[in-house]
Every structure is written in C-alpha cells, then in structure tokens.
Image (tube, rainbow, N blue to C red; front, side, top):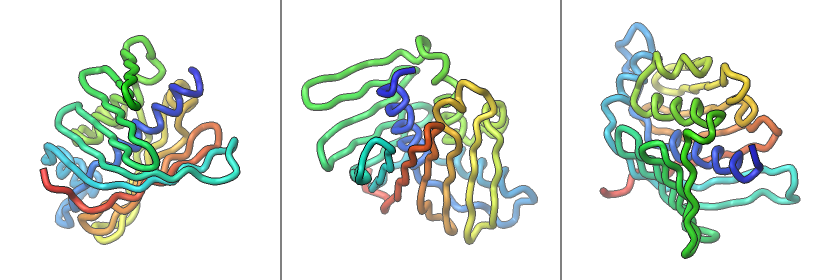
Length: 197
C-alpha cells in the first residue's frame, strides 16, 4: 500500500472514531456491552476537532482543525478547515478526498487490506460488538467516569497500517482519539463540542 493510501486510512480512522460517544451505562454488568448499546443508539454526530500528527519525516508536528460528521449506518466525513480546506468522505464502500477543485475516489473493494479497518469503524459506530471483535482485540479500561477503549488489529493486513487506536472519555464526553501507526507515526485528535445539525 502506498504512503498516500496509508495516510488516508489513518485520517479516515480519525474521522470515524471521533464521532461522539455517549455515556457508558453504569448499571450494565458488562461496560463494553453498555458502550456498544449507546453507540448503536447514536444515529448521527457533528463535532469540532483539533488534530496533531507526529510524523517521523517532519521536524515539527502537523496541526489541523475542522469538523467531523457521522450519519448511520456508514457515512463518515472529515472536513479539515485549517491550515487548508480538505474533505474526506467514506460512504457505501467508497472513499473520496477533495482538495480545492480536485477529487480522488477509491473503491474499497480494490484495496482489501483497508476493508477490514473500515468495516471495524462502521461496526464501532453501529455498536456492533461481534463485528468489531472479528477484526480487533477490544479492551475497555476504567468506568463510566473515566474510560479508555483500546482497539488492536487481529489480522496482519490491518496491522500493517495501524498498530493500535486508543479512545479516552470521561462520563459522556469523548476526550481524545490516538492512533499509533505501524510505522511509528502517531496522531492525536481532540474532539470539541457538538455542533448544531
């Protein structure tokens, strides 16, 4: 997989996983089931974000900000507004990237090494624990007041792109999404407040 496609995959991970997570129900016997249940109830999300990417090839981290959108069951959008406008959209198995007047489109069926990653994102947002655990080792640490969700790819093809995703939250608020890439690069996305529809 080319560096460009790996980078796009990491951005897509951020877009998808940065959709707001609801509170983990304290009364559930299994906190991960409770979290999945709350995710399944979420049909859309629209939040601000700031992102810092630490790339080995650069002396300084890259910083960006914008908006993230999710519409169930499978539409994910990341609108970067600063430092320059760019939009990434995943919908119905197609990934498109738009910068200025130029749009590039990628059919996921042509990139089977990306398909498990993106299906796992869909499963996370849909609250589909069984589909998620087919692709990832999933661990939820903490409780409803302070929690961390860890996703580690099971398959070698997925692990060649992303080593681990960690999502932290406090109560009903998502705090950060951190992606550790297989090549050692790292991205930290901080989610801002919900925006009006």
